[in-house]
Image 1 (cartoon, chains in turn blue, brown):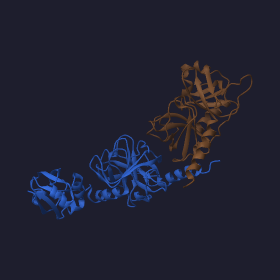
Image 2 (tube, chains in turn green, blue):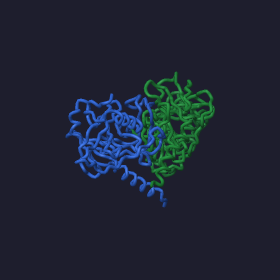
Image 3 (spheres, chains in turn red, blue):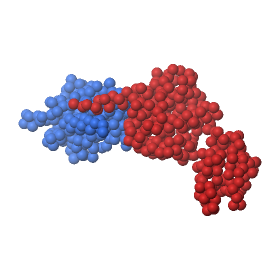
Image 4 (spheres, chains in turn cyan, yellow):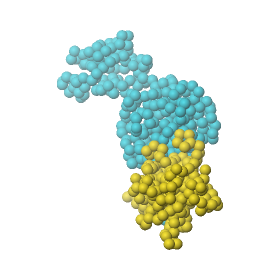
Length: 298
Length: 220
């Protein structure tokens, strides 16, 4: 007689039932609807950016069958996230797991609600990694890949772990052919910006740059081998106003070494906008300190 | 070390062995084969209508063979088929009045299926006998606008069906029949006719003239 298989089967079905009330159907395109997740008790819904092919006439349907009009508060194509506002109602706000408990090999369910009812596929966590940048340039706090089947309409739905907690939001479009989960840490960061500003805020210097090798003595002094050579400085930009010249080599921003383009990119988050920020450059063989005040990304 | 995985493996192995006892291979002429499942000890086997051929192929249905789990090859007769439901009923013919020993599968409650519950499909994909594939229930019912064959009742499952799986049993964690593997919806998603649809079909075959010639008894 089976001993653990019935428990295993029931536990999976229980996890799906428990999550169902937090999942909504999102109709934002002409073809198949997709999925959204109840984000807070005030009616905010998170979904995937790519399933909203229009900005208006978006409908959201809940577990009890009620359909309401939703307002698009903002979208971030780079992380494939969008935030919707619906009238306040008593849907269940899911419990989010910190992904540090996740291990490669763990079971995970991908859930969706492209129709009236919730649907589920099962897989395992295939790969976990450090922060990464999406092909569209979005910064994601952790790489989470599963082998769950992204059934049609599953984008915008959650990855649910073995204890029924939500790990993140699944997208089939961030990396083609791979089931990627955007972790809750990234959701919080991006959705706060979308709620308060309608877009993800980025700071802007107004420079073009390319990585370059530092002279040996400087490299030794700084403990870094490369910096960013400024190949253009826009007129009237924050960079020009701060005294940066074409041909300078940027080696740090806000006290953090700048070795590659990614370092500059992650150094120019929305929190830098309008803030005096120290930059260190190499000019004519000499290291210099300057101050810039990045502006909001146009 | 936890003992959970060995226990799970032992459950899975036991279940597969049990279900394999009710699985048959359905061979139509020389035109390839599909799967079927033994429903009753009197030789009743169900499979997909598309396994035994369309109405135009009714003649080939006279050359119907069933390969039992033991490897025995027996002649079978088409009792009825329903192209819309994609279900057909066969009867294994007695050999000099003697039917082989059969292990009918137990019927499960396909109306009580839950999304997320574990399921296993068994069949003869690519002609390999008794192959198991496991996954979970993605969705059930007629509300599947994203699936092919929309409007019909389906069980959509998160497992890979391949040619030759058709007509084979889909079972739950007890080994009870909950559906019949019928088609693929993409490489990793399978679609099954629910067991209650099969039982309804079988009931109508049993109450009707089940001895009619193949073709005449086709239900539409």
